[in-house]
Image (cartoon, rainbow, N blue to C red):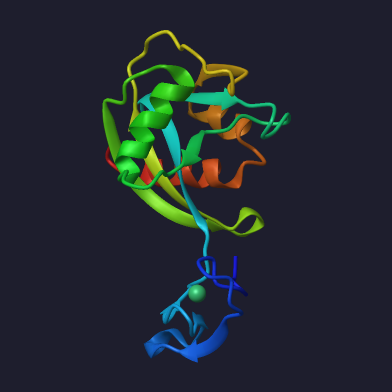
Amino acid sequence: MRFECCPKCGSKLVGREIGDEGLVPFCENCKRPWFDMFSTCVICLLYADRNKFALLKQDYLSRGHHVCVSGYMTPGESAEQTCVREVKEEIGLDALQVDYLGSWFYDKRDQLMLGFAVKIPEEKFVLSCEVDEAQWFDLEGAKKATEGAAICQKLIDEFLKKDL
Ligand SMILES: [Zn+2]
């Protein structure tokens, strides 16, 4: 999102050259720039071992395919803490290990997605009301179940390159 008016005082912003950033919307009243804004989310590939992955069905996100656990970061959290919180909220399990896999920008929603592999114990899922179903898959099953979920598929590819 690109600001046109100052979110603090409402003045119309003007373009100003700031260092290497080029023209940045600037409030002459508050004397500060307002950089383009986007939200930051984590997306977690849940696994118990290299051939056992947990995926969700969330009908409000997609009826066609399974998805990974994802959620918005809140101010004050590290991305790893967001992962632990989201995994607990969505399927009720405690993360055993959290490893960074890579990041992707999701243009459609203006979101920076930080991707992680999250190891979880093989225990019973306790689903949040946002989750319609959670299920274990082997590697081939997980690849098939996430067809159409581009970032989930990239997470699986990156996971396979790592020694986790
Ligand atoms: Zn202002």
